[in-house]
Length: 316
Image (cartoon, rainbow, N blue to C red):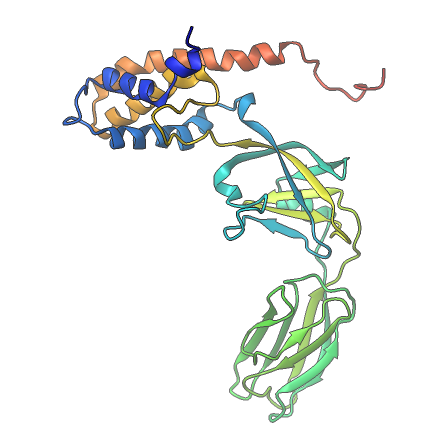
């Protein structure tokens, strides 16, 4: 006997359902590639907003690097766990673990940086004479947090000059390419394109840190910021919701076969919305909501046996 997955919930069946509910049985009315676009648009973008399903919950695992505090989407290395992160995953959730130990997850910059403030220290690394463009000095505290060093002065053209480190030991701004910083030792070498004016101080402002095992993670603007800044590689595990899988072939099925009708109705509503067919939308909406409730019921039943966590959980 054929299994439901192989006969009832394929992309081909979803297409057929879409044609029926939108009353577009022929290719002349709407082509199959167009239907597939509506189906995938619903699956990838609308469905994750409507439902948070346990079958889409996953664990994201990546590793820290020594002295690196920010981890974000990679678009170059497909083997990187954070490759295309902001498009593959929709939400980041507790719990969070660092090398197996529970860590704190923050999504508020205000709360996170009130605990881990980025306090700048400023020191003079020289005074301009109107001729010299090269200056050496040391930050008052080190190691220096990458992307936190700012060198500033006023040049002989009476212009404010600002140079920032790029996280790679180099500088961006009105300086020559040989300008550099050693984050470990705090040594700064800056070569301006135009000499600082006579009597103008060359200021170096930076943030220092003490490395260690991270115990807190901020998730903000699709980036992970860890504190303390790692002193070595640590394994980070975070609960996430991933997007449903895009449909690419006729025999492909969704993660759960029961979603097929919900997907078809959602795609059908999108087609009718583009056609401004309010009557058709009103006819489909009750069926769509019914399917949404039925799908959500699985999660309710799954969670029914769970106890609400308290401060005494695990103490028995």
